[in-house]
Image (cartoon, rainbow, N blue to C red; front, side):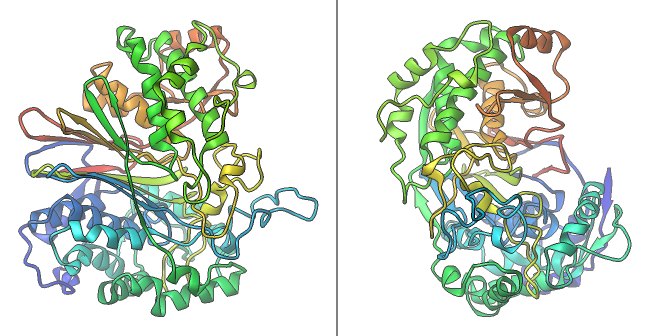
Length: 566
């Protein structure tokens, strides 16, 4: 499908950089699901965002430049998950071999407390942690971008030029985006105190132009004043005013004191590969390690992809890992997370020894394993350049369009990440995930995440850059795609696009996409599994480093996702 956006070159007057590629080409675009490139590649949830990242690399930028430009562009062209008002995580490997993990997850406001979403009887008030102003955590995305900036090469005005132009002058909606805006129209009316760009008198349709003047003004304040243009000044004033109008609790001090944090990556080996992923407060890296290390001794590749025996083993490792997630994982700045114990090889060997053969386990019989205590609407970007820099970033608003609240006068959506806390121990969140005290709400605390930005190394060089949106299905999506590549020997395209399955301990059922053979599903049901159809699981963006030095970039078929490179 071809989408056409007609935008004059003058829209880029905010930068004096002379392009090496016509901006007319930049706005006449197709959705490319798979490309091979020599110099650099970007895969993201929207073609224009991928092209923004590609364009800055063509201005002699590197993968970090492209990461910044793509994130800003996604905040404009993919408002359901791309954002200024959310947060996320970055895993990166620099050309000189440095491994990085950046945490720009949202935090609970200073006035947040453990029972803020409960009624006087101690019961969870339905929707209170999901909808509107009170569901928002303190945003971290902009702080994360500015922490990344020292690794970039180009000036900020170049990196922000595509996003500012797209917000100021508009871009054409895809069919999916138009449908989403129509679906959430009533929520935008209900949870906003000021008119928003996302609502018009008639319904949206593919090809309509979405113009976001207020968002453009916010982007210009960030360009002119840096992070202070978001966490202070006019933007902060507008956000705090929005909170007061809508009953939210984020204050100017909350914004002023927000900090992104550099963390030590979650790293482990799998056969001849080294895996670099995200540590706490994302559970993704540790879950991936647990699942892959429990799989490693089995020689799972002998069965072949989607063989019932292979699927059964993987389902059971997912069950065990998510049982541990519920009990032990949370913000390491607030709780002691037993990472060493949970990733210990002897522990994982004992944990997996009880996996039944040829029959379904029962979550009621599976408990967290230690005897001693020590989105679904998200978006992912995978980027690599010719010098060997590799960047994997997952960001989120949590649900589609977050809490559906736009900051009046500033034009950006707020997250509803407070629902990712355990609003009450044992009560499932939006994604059905159950948590305990380790993930209870506390002022300044980061809520537990499932985001799993990951880089796989081979011979100490980047081999795969991978990640996905999808709430609790993120770690299992990454797990399956990585095994598809290195155990089952699939092509990059098949590894990403073949159907996926998911188990998360509770509820005790296997979610599965369409496309599995009848024989595989029949065999799993015969083993005792409850199979529940799920229309879509994850949207994986993958870059494969080929042996000839080229890059193979694959965008998931499940959305408007697109790869760009040259």
